[in-house]
Image 1: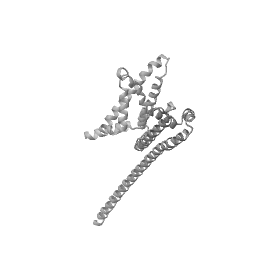
Image 2 (image 1 turned 135 degrees about the horizontal axis):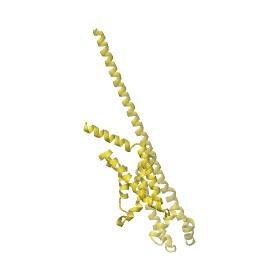
Image 3 (image 1 turned 120 degrees about the horizontal axis):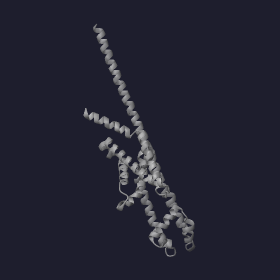
Image 4 (image 1 turned 90 degrees about the vertical axis):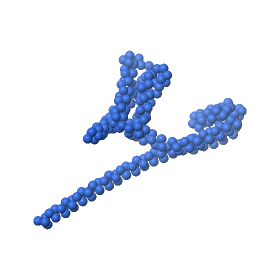
Length: 275
């Protein structure tokens, strides 16, 4: 009886922390905290507002600590099986360090609390989970891109390094080619000055842009879109499987009820015939 009462109490607590009103309350606090942290970056001339911002920040952090404590009690050991719970725990723990001494740098990391929106908003969580799922494919594309960068940087240093400071060393060439890949001022700031000494340099930059900006980088988009689609399909399959399971359970329940009705009718007939 005690175990059943304990489970019922935990279930009610889980129902509270997973309710839409509780999630909306935490989401509102995260957004409010984002505003207060943003206000700290401005010179606040109003004395009462300058004094109120740290107080509000402390209250919000305290509520976050209470929220995580309630979840820990409600879920028990299951709390640590969720990566999102670990994420929330780490973000809130950073906020508890003092803003002095060796921990001063952590003051700027308090803005990471805004990322808690990922864990409380399902749509954002789906996007982040899809991005995490796409990391292996993105890693292979990054390896291809890094190889292209290395080969291109070595070629640019050999071809243009003697006359252009932008390609004087391997590091300088890699940084310059990164600017070319982003297409930010590549023509006027990089290509045309290089073409003054090397008229056929445009061919090198044209091939590099086609291979990196138009080909490899678009592969990132393809991998992410494929991951989002597979995430959507997995959810649809899970929803369909759940629906099929519920339908099967309903059919089994209906069969059981029909079987009981048949048995009751047989018993009733036997009783009537015996009379």
